[in-house]
Length: 216
Image 1 (cartoon, rainbow, N blue to C red):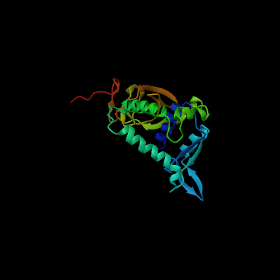
Image 2: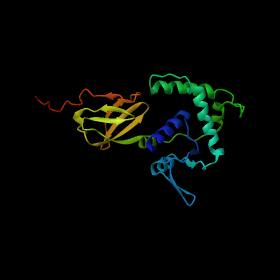
Image 3: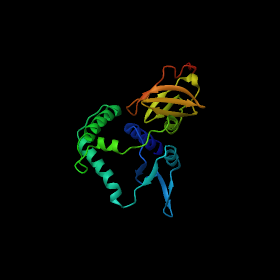
């Protein structure tokens, strides 16, 4: 979905330490809703993000392998070189292995360019990262707290202390460098380290503290 795509783009830009001038993507609904008389009607949230960080958005032309070939070739390379036979314990472990693999690959001389990708990146003279407020704004997603006091994020249920009285209410969840913060009415109310394994449930010690017990 669009929030996840934006989060991935932010992670990529932070890994580069800079911004590209253009972002070329496929024609998925998280980016492009439709073309009207050869003019794009962008997904509003994606368009807002790109304008906020001053990066131009472009999409691949349909049925034109010249614009997608390099991307698809990279996917094939990742599947064959990294993914085959890899084992990992959770998402954080997989990300660490993938990062180490990228560092090795980017330090090798490319057969087509005859240069190391890490050196070519420096030559690009890319743009500086935006102010932190842009990251904070677009890394925030809306969630509804369940009646038993959980908020769901990336397949994990996080329990909230009942003293917050947020059961059944809408909150904002923000992820930043492995830490989740929960916001309500513009104020931060809770913080927790993000869990890397989906389907986990993380109850809070005071999740049901204010709820009266029922006698048999």
